[in-house]
Image 1 (cartoon, rainbow, N blue to C red):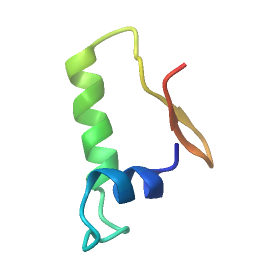
Image 2 (image 1 turned 45 degrees about the vertical axis):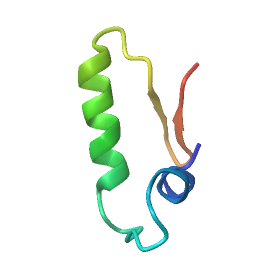
Image 3 (image 1 turned 60 degrees about the vertical axis):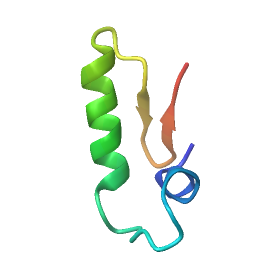
Length: 50
């Protein structure tokens, strides 16, 4: 799932797509879930849960 789609679905329509909101939310989620990492980054695409 792309960061843009996550931003569109999880935040309001006024959210700035250039903010680090999605990246920060993913970082916090990864910290809470611990190891092994559940959310993977797919370069050039976005994020996935395998």
